Image 1 (cartoon, rainbow, N blue to C red):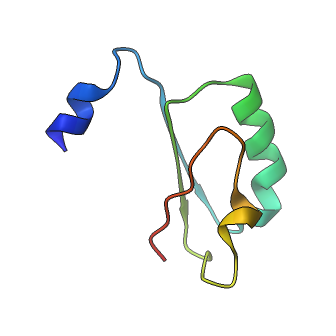
Image 2: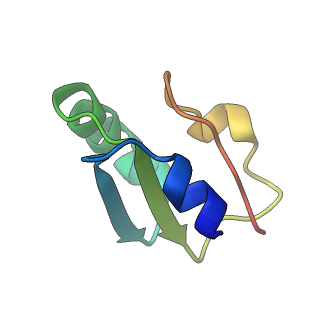
Amino acid sequence: MKEIIRALPKGVQFAHVNLCGILNELDQITILLKDEIFGVFAVSESNLDCDISDSEIKIQGYTVIRRD
């Protein structure tokens, strides 16, 4: 983990949101990410499961990494 942190450029922006229903909020998240540039944007979503595909929550310019 320390190697990852050292590799990040100084001033990298982080953001985190905790949602219940990412599909209902995806348009607002997309607008936010067009207005702001984050090196890391994390979403905690307790209702996300294997019934929702990566392509349904993919936002251009960001990589989906899941733990469900």
